[in-house]
Amino acid sequence: MFSGIVQGMCEVVAIDDLKNVRRISVRLPKKASKNLTIGASIANNGCCLTITNINNDTVSFDLMAETLAKTNLGYLKVGDPVNIERALKVGDEIGGHLMSGHIITTVAIIRIQNTKSHYTVWFRLPENLHKYILPKGFVGLDGCSLTVGEVRQNEFCVHLIPETLQRSLFGMREVGDFVNLEIDAQTQAIVDTVEKVLQNKGVQAA
Image 1 (tube, one colour):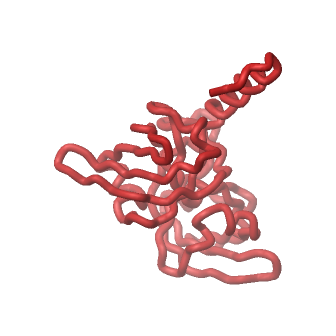
Image 2 (tube, helix red, strand yellow):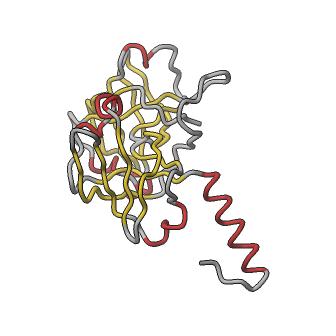
Image 3 (spheres, one colour):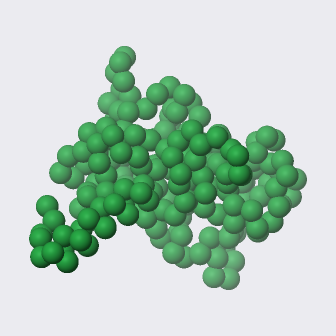
């Protein structure tokens, strides 16, 4: 599990296509590389990955075709940065919201509004996910726990503070970039449960 509080960015230093997997290696900041073991989990752009090799401050992850297809990790090149967060330990403070690191899809940035008073990023909203993205609800974007701002028919936005822009990839994201999306598990559970109850009663959900 993760909190959605990105600990920083690290550089992709190697990409190797092996049999049935693509191995991605990243160089971690010193603080993030302490006491790591093979088999531990680290979120890369919000996607939970298992460490398969450790070489000093460089760690490797093996990505299957499903992961490459459903996330933006398939677009990575050597030299690209990724958001990272180590898995939570018992007793850790949860500053964002609980996240599993299971990416459901990617969403495209369709516009960015940058003014003196706010920095707002708008995303294309897939029709099948509209019911899970609610104003003031939680959403995971590239591993960042964020509060949804406005939701429209086929788009939604988040408002970002300078700390988020400095600490994460959002400070360099551009229109057209694809961002990993994890919907809030509690929201999904509530929506799906209500829909099921209504269906059992013969009521069509709005």
